Image 1 (cartoon, rainbow, N blue to C red):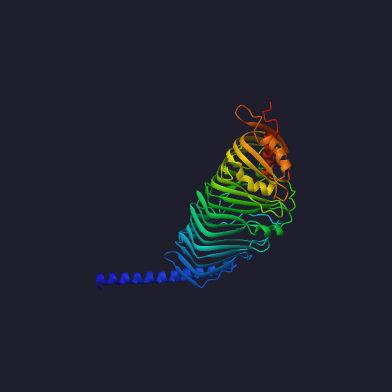
Image 2 (tube, one colour):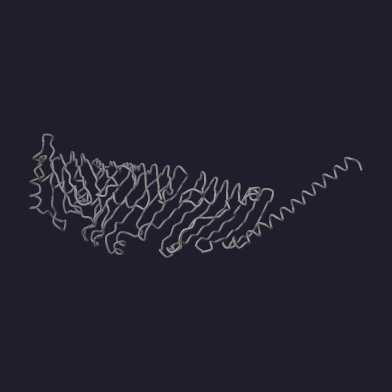
Length: 510
């Protein structure tokens, strides 16, 4: 037989052998995959699928129309397809570990029903000897829904897209937020919803998250019910909230456990154009529980919180109180609010400082500087503030509905300092004003109480007893009502300061 013919036949034979080996390998690989999917360990998750495709040469496995659930039935998953690509055989054969180039999940729908906490059981570390490594995990067009029937709470997120690089399970790090270690990641989603409490919900239009930055767009925190409906459901006071924020941006977040204690660190938290409406129905019974000052509230957090900087830009705050059944409440308004909070922490070092600038009733520039140390168990604090060029008539709707009073005149400049603790506070104030005149209304708000109006204006109208710069001075002491908030405490100090400044000696006390 000629040499060329012999060589050709040998080549054909080798090719046929390779084809047979390939067919056998493909058959063996498919059988192994099918056997694995039918194993007791996998079937504990009640895995079902309509179609299985494998490619032994590329190390690919694809399942279509996948349905699975956790053994305890608290997690259910449906997916259009699940594709594993680039299975590394050598790693599997030599070490028994699974290593993939990519895992892609298309259109998964995840439903989660929290289970009741078992306080009798103790947590156990994952002791699995097998390591799963995925160079790239991608999830496309997913959705998530939580249904907590026992607490009647829920959460959801739509259009979820996730890309994770260098995923390793089980994890070796102490990050409690993820059950695995990973490198870079990117998550996006839309139409987020969360039941924050039986009375409030959180929503947002879109979320973006990666290792260095997170962003929530069109964020809202709202009371579930209208003002009247909420009052009908309450046995005691609880504020009605409506908070909307155009964008919330977080940078340089770090979550983990150190010395068996969780921590959450954040570089910056930025709130863009927040609008916060608060309504309180004072006709309801008071909530007489002890209200913690912010020192104690931060100190008692069950985690080490550290936020280097909080920035608020172009905010608006409105506050309403219903104090009389037959009078509609009016708003106390702060606009153009810009604020910076530095070193916000629970167990860290140094003072928390806040610097706030706004316009009171959209006309008088207002500044507030506030500092306190969460570690100070006396809960001491220091507040300094300033108000200038305030046209007092702008606050009349609020005064009329809340205090049955009206006022005319201009506050040219007002300065105050308040220092206090858990039990009491003291401070001083100085004020320069023009042509102040109070009108005290009758209880029904439809007429003027001429006697009280005349008495009050004896002390306030002409701004007498001023210093050489035209300021009247006052000082005050206040005992804290511990069943009221810090802002009620602050208001009591300002109220006492205004009364003493306008009706007292007027001169600075040595």
